[in-house]
Length: 70
Image (cartoon, rainbow, N blue to C red; front, side, top):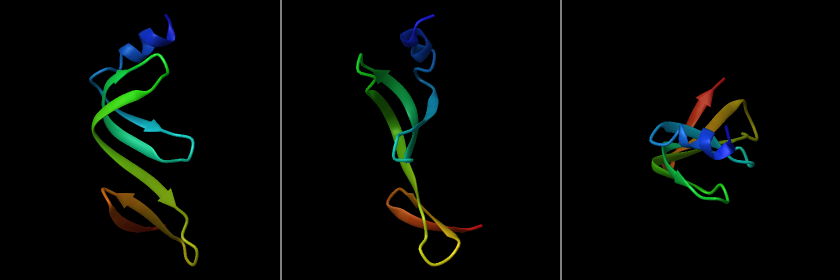
């Protein structure tokens, strides 16, 4: 089974894609190309940012900042 065949099994499923800078995207996997660029629909972007002064975690959700206490 090739890499493309494995990717095709996830088409039309809701997936989470993590990229190298620790951001991740959650959305419906619509398509991809030979360079492994992917298309997600109804996607949301998330990232974690380290707090400088305390142990609160900062999470950005749809351009809103949410603080979570450990």
